[in-house]
Length: 136
Image 1: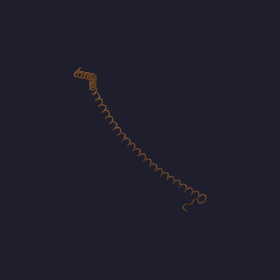
Image 2: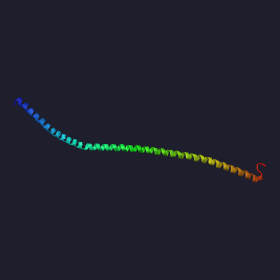
Image 3: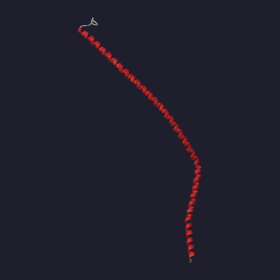
C-alpha cells in the first residue's frame, strides 16, 4: 500500500467516525426541535387564556384592595366615634365624681351641724339652761 492509499483509508475512517457521531446528534436535535415546536404550539394555545386569567386576577386584587381601603376608612371613622363616646363617658364620670365629692362634703357639713346643734341642746338640757335663747 502506498502512502496515498493509507491517507485515503485514514480520511475514510475519519469521515465514518464523524458521520457515526454526527447522525445520533442530528437525530436528537431533530427530536428536540420537534418537541420545541409542540411546546410552542401548546403555549400559543394556552397563553391567551393564561393572560386573560392573569388580567382577571389582577382586577380582582385591585377590587379587593379597594374594598380593604374602604373598610379601613370605615373602621377609622367607627374607632374615632368610639373614642368620642369614651371621652364623653370620662367627662360624665369626672362630673359625677366631682358632684359626689361636693355632695359628700355637704352631707358631712350637715351631719357636723346636726351634731353641734344636738350637743348644744343636750348641754342645755343637762345644765338646766333650756328655754332661753341667745343668752337672753
